[in-house]
Image (tube, rainbow, N blue to C red):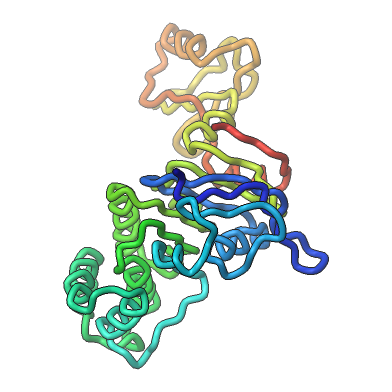
Length: 302
């Protein structure tokens, strides 16, 4: 049974259709990226999972159940709009919000200490929230989200305001959650973070799916007919190459439809070209994101 299943969901606000026939699933033990431009319908979709709003038509299920107060107890949600009690200390904040999730008071501090230590925040345990930097407050908000050991974790822009060190700590935290068999939904504009941790992604635009499937399969599907070559010598324009684009640290060779990377490599070797790196050009998720945000159209690469 998937952790989340969304089937043909439609949600409109007056004349604006925010989600238009969206379908996808999220499995246990995976990190699922939900991406798309501003206003694409991501937050509306997350709020339907949270039972904050209900779909007009279609179905949303959490662990096989209709979203309800009961399913809320099985998930942790980090909203994009942050909110902590500034006059409380870190441990008071975690303890209070964990108690609202029904967590055993005797278990709260030990679990909080473990997460504070893992994220480098243990020395700030007794500091007031108002004494923390924006990034440190973000870490505490994330700890609050997962301290009660939810089976499903929904994170809306969790990397906002984090420095590189804390970004790495949060990424490791997400990987640990996956190893524990949790389902993690990551909604963010930071494509490099999606590429670093996500197993599958869904990109929405104008409320509809435009990319859905395994991240590796999506990148392979959009692979251009080109190779990247890094060499100390000038890279020649061999047969089967229609264009040579010189970049700062490599040369991009655009191949004609009948050519193959293997044929190009063989010719470079025959020409005694020293090669430090040779690889088939694969677009970044950011490049695919920019292309699909403008084009639209359903693409499923499962």
